[in-house]
Length: 506
Image 1 (cartoon, rainbow, N blue to C red):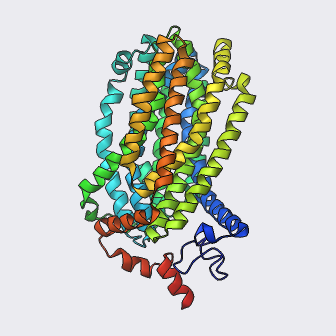
Image 2: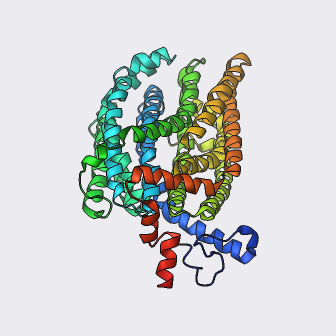
Image 3: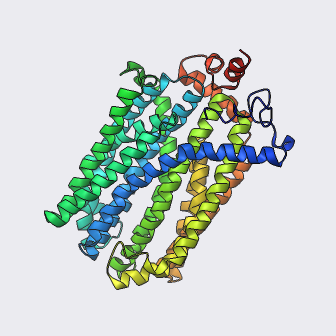
């Protein structure tokens, strides 16, 4: 199905003369179901493979924690801290810097400026490579940083050593993230799913070989992590260069043009996403100050690890709705953009409810994959209710963030995240956890309060968006950054409303 709008165009059922959906007020139930089904198929055609790929990438982190966890409670907590605090901090910043590419590639593809995708991707590679050098001190000084933040001495030392060993994987992100955004914008997501799956399988085999056969311990885990990270990045880059000739025209000096404007949008994206990803990281840091830090951090890390699986799935949905929004805005279809968002939010909420029910049903067995320690198993079971509520809230929030990335209004979301998380959520968690002496449950309860406030505010913003105005802003943005007349590109692009009508009536 090349275009969801083309399928019903001939029957004039759900598409108006402008190539966009008709107003929902003029539709009957059959028409509404047709729109819902079309947008569902389109969402999951993109989101399914992306979600699978993201889950496989997250699996690289998760199974590393699982394998190392069986080496002992200290190793479990140390690798969890290294991955959750250092890894999340760095990955959140890098994926945020790369999200500017998601906005521009999606809108350029929708507007018919496919040749610009390669230029934008190269520009993003340059920016992300420079970003890795700025982040390098975090790895080098991981142990003193973690101690300063209040982590247990033994955990901080082991986590710092593991972080140092995984520095090579950091640099692979400067290729991995831009190439994945390049492919996502064109809905070429099947290859991402296959590469991610192969990387996950290879990583599991290497972890087993290095840790249990060669007895290399954490060093073996880090070696596998680095090898698979670079293998993943190089495989995606090879596909882009060899099989995407329409978007990748070779290396170009144009990548250095409009660099500051691109950096500015990248920074806005990074701030928006970092405030989200660092939020859950902060609860790990606060938990490190509690009594019996090893058990507290270990149990919470397992819960956050489980929540991470759902979060990674919804990052796939986030990417899919971002592609849908950016493509449709680039095509000038305001109502198609709005209806795709509504369908994605509704379905994500339903999935979140199912995830919460599953977690509560198996709460006594959640920790088995990560540890054999009975104390940790019981502690995780007690936190399952907080985990379930968090997973429910996290089902909607990433979708709305994806809409923000697709539309290019990351700056507004950054302010909402800052207020909800760091002005309200963390102070509330501190009061409940330390002042009210509720421990981990108090800390997490405060975090949930911040997450709920953020979801409420983002929902209100989403409700008030003028999508016709967003289309106008997209056209202006692409005229400035695209280097050509966007209206002309849309007319020549058979995927656009004008091009669609020209093709049909020809």
